[in-house]
Length: 186
Image (cartoon, rainbow, N blue to C red; front, top):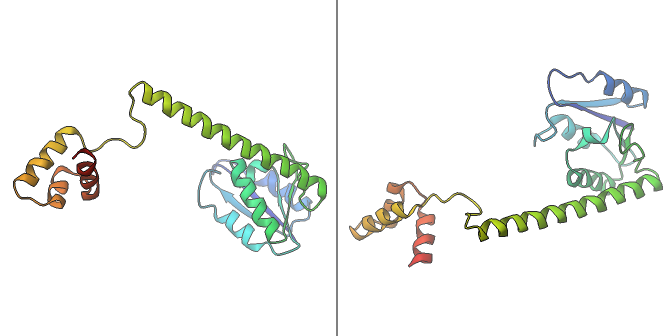
């Protein structure tokens, strides 16, 4: 069975172009979403993926309608492949992708390799940026919520006989944060 998936990012946009293309390709069922591709919960995509059975082919108008990152696309295609479901992209960049055919699987494999390469480059740039920030004396990571003043106040409260948990709550932090900080700073 040919199953279609169409998505537009806003309510102002229309699905008509994608619906027409998917119906012309022979899709009996077209699942739709009207929300940004970065949304975690896309009910139409979830329904489309769930509807796919072995031997089916999921059709999308353009590859960017299916997922926003190459990593997400690779995950979706690997999931479909494991279930015996193909993917066919109808137009735009990626139109040569038809995982029911050897050349389509090859092209998607190249895309997947580029995706992995891109992730590695991003990871390296992120590490380099963090190291550079540390060298300049910048804090890297989550914001510091236990200021030196709050730590001093917590220590005084503990010295006055308040428990660590009570002292932590009184200065507005989680008791585990206070415990770790006291252990690290002695």
